[in-house]
Image (cartoon, rainbow, N blue to C red; front, side, top):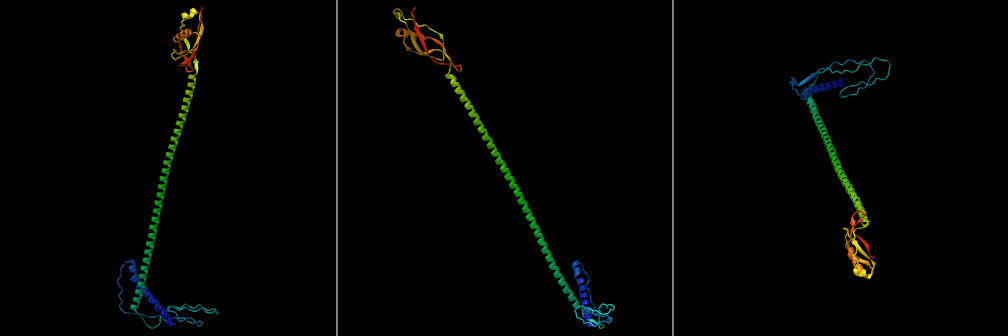
Length: 299
């Protein structure tokens, strides 16, 4: 029992010394402060164990040795007894010595372990920070690329819309030009049709004589003396063209009186006649062909 308690006490003191040394050495490094070094006057530390307290009577129990502590085994059910006092740490009466260099070594190992852990933690934190920074940069780059792509898409859409608007404007101009051309052609055809209709009407009116020529100056034929003495009579029919200025053109005998002297006298007289020219449907003077009878009678 004393050995178990002694082992537990020594281990506790070692841990306490190690923690004290660790705190003295490591904490100033973490807090970045300087402390005066501990000066140990003796190379050995002495611990005097306290006297073991007598345990109350109880059922004998089996002690399981442990490197750091001793635990009481569970009590079997029995008649009621006052609860047993928990075991307390106690040291033997004999003086125990523990080298100080082992405490320093344990503290150094603890410090090295802590420093290694701190370095690993620092590396891990640095890796996490670097990874987070890389992820942030990647997100920023992705967001920038997304914005650039969105801006490019908007620019392309605006350019496409502008191009479509320009094409639509060109098509509208082409449609307007085509409509204007068709309208001009339609008007031209309509005007041409009107002109042609007017020309046909005028041609029809021009061909149609509205008024025949009227004699304005009639020269009587000379009765030939030979024919008078012979008692010759007759009618000579002469075809002639009355020009637009009212003159007689190209007279010719188409029906003889039977006497050449009478026919010649009739032709000579008709050539001297004058007419008011014929008028067509347009009121224009036109040439007109007519037949003129010339009669010779003896009184």
